[in-house]
Image 1 (cartoon, rainbow, N blue to C red):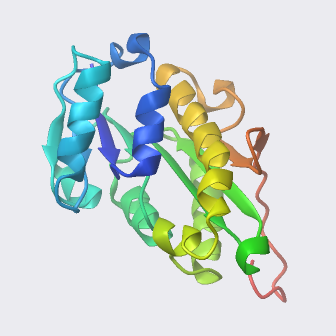
Image 2: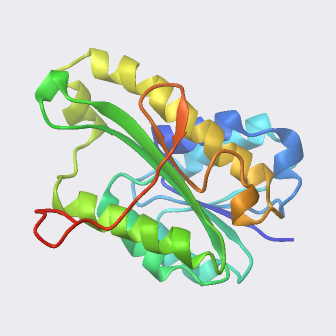
Length: 218
């Protein structure tokens, strides 16, 4: 069986763990790899996992998930709840082609406290080149037109953001957990869609197309 590698042991990572079911964890080897460069976050995540699922034997690694991939295997599943789009892109590009990867993030658009809040979730299966191409197009474009912002920066001036973003993060985490449970499914058979967007608790398919050459972002 394969392992699960979780990159990012932050709120998003914990939200994914909270959505997991015991039958899902038993589809994989128990020695999950938990990677996070910040001190103690991987250790704390390991404690959360073993508290919920005593059969698991998670291995905390204080390092970026890109480095932790060196300890992974060809058929492992990589789950990303990273703090920046750049880290997500680097991990997608560094993973083995035979590894399935799920990623998610939540954030707020321009406009300050009035900005649109949303979450994005995606699952790329081996040899699903269409989803991979669309996901990379989207992430690279979004990276070029946005800036990284910590949860503290998003919620500091706007106390409601933490509350408002929570349903988005939970919806994305439910989708990631579903896809983890659908280990053997083909991309077209995954629940919902391989790429999804949430403007609240409702999940919508994310359809990405190439822009025109004269567009600022394509």
